[in-house]
Image (tube, rainbow, N blue to C red; front, side):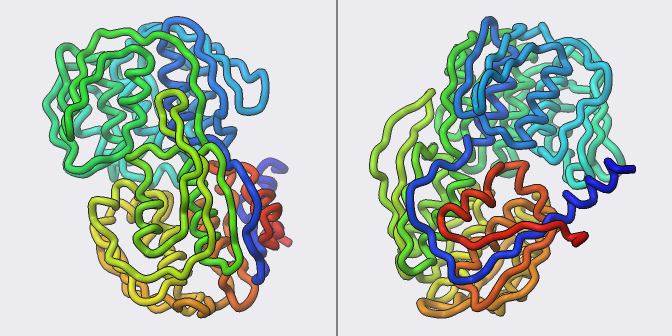
Length: 451
């Protein structure tokens, strides 16, 4: 009973954010979640010991870590952000004794669906109430073309029951740009007979291809086409996880909209398939400078300096949508503070994230008095302009961490305090977020919704 009470209190975590804050200083946000997930998966399947630095100690990545421990992989955590993974090889995973619980992590669920489709044991993937509503047909259908035996629940959601099957390589034109679907199929293809060829309709995150190559697996990338053959091996190595640009995005937006702000973000991953948020902000007039650029573990990294600059509305180019899909909640706040109208289309993927992010953000913008028009695949936002103020009030994040963090940044231009409900899931992607924004100059306090 006590556990249920604690869970309720955590679920009802509330942010109380006062207006009048500012962002200044130097920070390093947590490690990249996408790379953290993949480092565990490929490190576990490699021959030898893989070391990881900068690992994201968030709930999503820790769910992936526990899943591989449940399949017999020894993973040590000698220090914060550090892992030592004793790889078991491509065929060394063991059957888990129970369903693999993946919390709120859609990345874990979709990537593991592909990886486990080629194993020699039965498995079940399950998650929390939020994850259990998210669509899984997008990975199940192409996996079934490869011969995978997956059973979803009514509505195409988890739990997912996976039975051993013989996989065959396929030629698959992806209907939408999705790094999770692509990565799922690449992991399954390692266990398939023959070659798999994937064609992307537009570029999306390529961390899996980069990391496979870093582990010595032959992946051929030619434009929007990726080829991979089954039967290869992975060789253990060292991974230096850069700071997550998706987490940095909130601070890039916050400093861009806050007069007097100047912030430096250290060691941020600037993979070309992830920099849509920078491209969009710069197109809006943001003052973002790359101070240095180097390569860490096969991934481009840089220090970013951002200063306040008046923003103007734009029509967001559709080729930037897959490059910034997770950062749009924060970009909606930038648009709300800009001069003129910002238009987003081609982003229907936002409808099936942890929440319907288009509608949830629109509801919050309405509370703040921002004029907008919701579209099936996007939104049109009429910003308050330079010197304009957002309103104040209570925002329901609906358990979506990115919604909660985005409206925290909106407080920098609000006319009064913001109360943001249901913030517990912020810890899934950004542990220490509240403490970091406090240190930078945003007056934020936390309380239980039960109080």
